[in-house]
Image 1: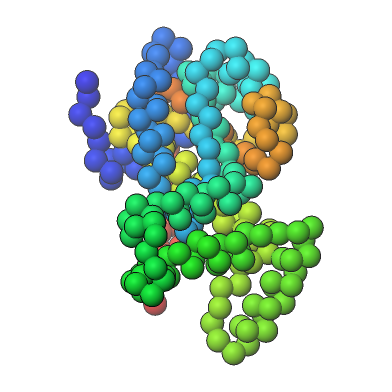
Image 2: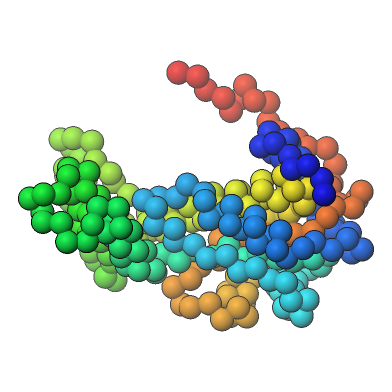
Length: 245
């Protein structure tokens, strides 16, 4: 068993691997452990609007591969992980947070006896989250946008309240989980490749995902071959992207 890499070592080691070694299998239990690390990723309002579909079945991988346009990263993958956004579960996730607050503060504390922290937390998940996520044919989102735009003339205010805004928030959150996963895999000496190119509608149907689910990305998993990394890493000079104020 190799010593697990440090965070810095794992970040440096991680590459998008396009060809995996067919002779080197990876343990599904280790991949699952890395997905548990993914679930610890920072996320908007602790709503955790994600699901991770860990695919170990060769037959399902073979069905998904042409839907990823037969990329080598899919064809040679030992396993796949499909990161799915579940913005449609916002009510369930908000309720889960409120239930957790019951374990922290007690379930039947009178409002007059609640601490300021408890009042703020319960108000956040009971009122603010529904205000942000509730939607009806785009109409409610439009009125929310008008309201915050007017208030924003007089003071700073959170402006991302439309359906499209909240969709972006959910996808950003899921992307953070995917990055946690890939770094965790790299720390264990395993390789991944986040694949953008895919027919997400067909894959969604293949996996029988519900209507409100959206595929964020598909990550292939395996152990690299010498040809698996296509050249040296290239990055724009850091001084072009780093801005100190």
